[in-house]
Length: 344
Image (cartoon, rainbow, N blue to C red; front, top):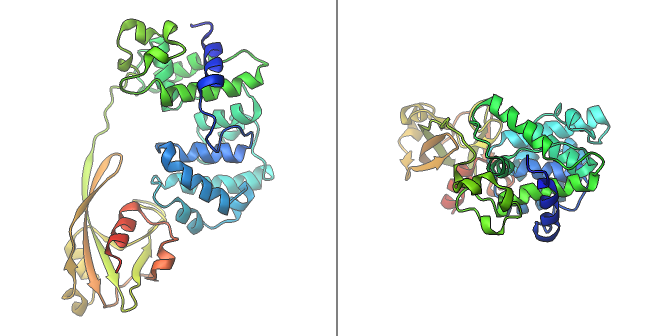
């Protein structure tokens, strides 16, 4: 176990780590939590604008709890992984209901809230309350497995638990609250800026002399993960209906399934199903647009838009929506892209 790992990371973060991001240099758990949720599987450059807009509309956890799900989805639109937004809204409501609007101060209590896993809880507890707990997001896993030469398969829950134990052992000693925050930020920054997935900048790394992966000459073999995600494909047909005023027919999706709870063009499994949902006169007006592919984490969606001018579609949860309103609604990224490209 590298004895001075934490000390090196803290010193490096102080002089070379990131400090300009809006969720840094704060002990406000609301801002730290918001950033941690947004940064899951999303680039920092993308998150910056969303983070600012969320804080403008929802400056406190109470404000977020009082907001509607539609408002939250509207501000989230384009970030993807909408379960994060749904859990975030529920979490805010529970913070208010269970904890009087104050985030709990320990990682153990934080993990009882919706959408807060062990790593996010530890980040909040470490940054805001100085608790001696380890984080283990993707960047940190990469740094630690390379430094330790940890060859366990990270697709195994037992091996991930073993890495959690090692990560905890590497933390600064008890009683160093300031060091905990600096260390946590530092190890995240190392993974984000130096210890990259490919072509890591080992020559400028503050822990290169104690890195097992570098000593072995193959740091990129870590972390080890053998289980590969199986990709699938699905074809869907979407009805893009506009009325004489240029409004679009949108429906609110069910609470479960693809694009759950979002506003969406009506979606069908086949072109025949789409046409069957229209009156006979409207069926003859339907025009096929250029299909396109939308890539999800585990699936490729082959989307086939069908345009309809005039006619009255059916749908209990659907209505006509003008451009000003749909611009504020939570829409799946491919729907927003299609509406924007077909406007006018």
